[in-house]
Amino acid sequence: MPRVEIVGSFLPPEELENALSEKIRGNMSEEAYHAEEDRVIDNLINREIEAGLQIVTDGEMRRKSWDRDFWEGFNGMSRERIDTGHIYQDEVLRHDLLRFNGRIEFNPEHPFFEKYSHMLELTAGRAEVRQTIPSPGELYLRILLASNGDISKFYESPETLIDDIVEAYRKTIAEFYRLGCRHIQLDTGIWGRLSDPDFDRQLLLGGVDSDKLTETLLDLINRSIENHPEDLEITFSIAADETRIPRWFDEKDLNRLHLMLEQLKADAFLLPFAISSPEEIAALRWLPEGKRAIIGIVDGSLPNLESMESILEAIRVATRYVPVSMLSISPTCGFKVRNRERQGLNYETQWTKIALLREAAEEFARSQEA
Image (cartoon, rainbow, N blue to C red):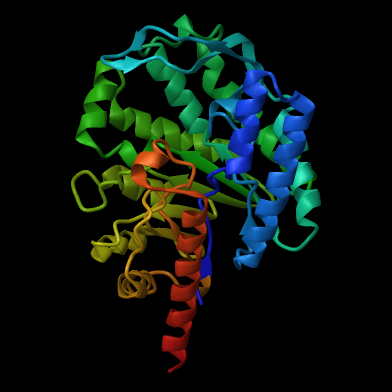
């Protein structure tokens, strides 16, 4: 039957949010807060395993940002707090910006290494552990857009930027492998938007040609993961954002997604689809033989439950193109979403979604045996 997987992030439980508030107020020490984080992640891993997940994550509980927390672990990168101003049009800066104090380099003391080892220790062989990190292409494009196409404004050696990113990622992935990691997921919010005309216009405003960018990203990512060990599975996870699905429906705009599936040297792809349009899952026909497909078919950003028949139909369509042994089902996005109160999410919602996926996988298996 299809395996049930997750995108990676989980909503924090109330006790961790309360602990963070106490730390911010000065009522809890850093040591006490990290101990609470450890306890929450320990409980999370136990619950993931109880929910039937064979590959678990730490829920990205320790991260303030899904991408910048990882990048600032490289040598040559730091973070600066900005509270006013704009980047392009109307995007108000209310977050930390990356800054460079040298060239991007592998950091043997990257904090994610210790966090991964701790997660591996907590799991104690009861499940496989996946490390999620932002795609190297995400970092390149972030720098490119922030510099308005002139990388020299931000980076001291613009002619080596791609080579520096590739080398930092290759060494980082190799170190995760040395520590015992056999599942690495590269996350990107950009690839799922490359077929969006609005995003295309935004790129042009930044002096970026989307066709040339597609070629550059494919080459950069493939170089970053080439020659990885055979027993290390690299998963490429795409999204548009947490409330939008990539434009699978538009044949004209689908070209870049098509290239990604055919040319990217990942071992597995985590792809979100609109369950209301299962015919779009036919895009899996471009997936090369031997690649695993993880199809996101329940909305991880909303609490409402999809119908069992809709999930089963999505699985049936997917198995026309991918053997069931190479197929997994998942939420469309991570559970740690913005404005979750407005969207009605809570800590238990995510487990209800996972249980629904597991029930659907079991029902599909029963239907195949009948």
